[in-house]
Each structure stands twice: as C-alpha cells, then as structure tokens.
Length: 318
Image (cartoon, rainbow, N blue to C red; front, side, top):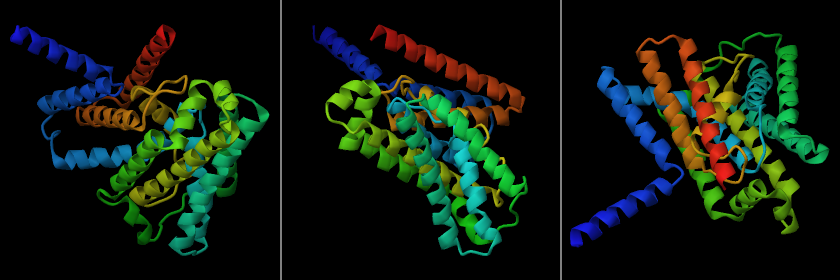
C-alpha cells in the first residue's frame, strides 16, 4: 500500500510539473543540449555557451518587449526597424563627435518615441496592430535608408564596444528578464496586461485604462529594441542601416515557442527566455555541424508553426 501511495504521489507530482507552461520547453532545451553534446565535440564547453549567450542576447531583449505586446493582445512587426532607426539616426551623433553619454540616451529616446507612435496609432485609429506595425516598419526603415543613404558608420570609437564584450550583453539581458518577470508576475501593471490580453472589453469595463497600458507596452517594446541595438553596435563595432532585419520573426518565434499564447492573456517572460535559449542552441548546433543556413530558417519556421498549432488547440479546447 505504501509503495502504491508513493507511486501515486510521484505520478501526481509529475502531472503538476507538466501543467507548468514552461516545463515542456525546458525539457526540450535539456534534450537539445544532451543531443548536441553527445554528437558534437566541444559543444558542451564554457566557450561555446559564452558564444550562445552572446548570440541570444540581442534577439532575447527584443523578445521580452514582444512578449509584453503579445500578452496584451497586440503585435509588433516594427521591432527590427526601430532597432535600426535608433542606432543609425542616433548614431549620427557619433559622426558629429558627440560624447557617448549623449549618443546612448539619444538612441534609447528614439526607441521610446517610435514605440509611442506605434501605441498611439493602434489605440487611436482602432486598426489591427499587425497592420499598423507593418506600415510603421516600412516607414522607419525607409527613413533610415533615406537619411543614411545605406552608408555604414565605421569605424566607431572603442568606448562603444564595451557594452558588447564578454558576458556584459548577457548581464543586460538578465537584468531585463528580472525586471519584467517581476513586473508581469508581482505588479498591478502585469495583472492588467494579462487582463487586457485575455478579455479587453472586460478589462475596460472593470476600470482598467486600456489605451494607456497598450501604449506603454509599445513604448517598452521600442525602448528594448533600441537597447538591443546598442548591444549589437557594441558587439559588431559598426552601425549598419540593415541592422535588425528578421528580428521581428525571430522574436515572435522565441515568444510563441516559449509558450506565450498568440491570442494574448497567457504566457511568461521566463518562457520567452527558454524559447530564445532553444533557438540559440539549435543555431549553434547546426552551425557547428556545418548545416546549410537555409535549413536553419526552415527549422525555425517549423518550430513557429508547431508552437502556434499547439497554442491554437489549447485555445479551442479552453
């Protein structure tokens, strides 16, 4: 009887674990690490994990902003364009010889302004966020190309490289994860974001200032896109007008693979982190196996479709 009770307790505990939204993706990450470590020499090493941590940082920071947007029932296709706009237009200060303590805040301010424009248009025009941000994505990139004429800013002073060295990018990512994990789980802001994404009209009738909160999440998304751009400049050592291309799709991939519902109102920043880690591990493994880069895009696309299919099934069941 005691053995039977013990087995039942273990089974019950395992069921509780698998009820946690992030559990499956965590298991997938562990499995992928085990598979690549057993098949690729040097994969399981501190040097390789440092490389992976640097690779996932820029997309990861953008993905946190995307998580908040999707949790609120929105969408932001302009994150890569905001990143490029912020570092290229703000980067003109480098050309003019401005000090770093002016250039960096200027870049971040540009991200905030562009995020606010997105939020303002979405909440005031009552047009789907997908359409608005698709439009602003092209506007922001167009302005960037017109002003820069497609010319790189290089070389840049070595002081700008500090933010991209070693584990410093990952420390920024960890700080962003900590702040917004706490904000979504432990504050009124987080509760209202979930409420808006789950049932916007109910939240509105409950007294939640929906327009304000939706604008705030787009401002945060813009700010984090610009911050990611700063780190990208630090890692690369130059500013390029094409920066951020494809970031919107990779960010969405990290979010949905991490378990955040594409319909809004359900998910977590932690899940997005695990999603970005999984994508980083797959990319590193395929690169070390010398797999054709086109396969990497194919695998990412398959993972997105698979994650969205599971989310849709969960939504229909609910």
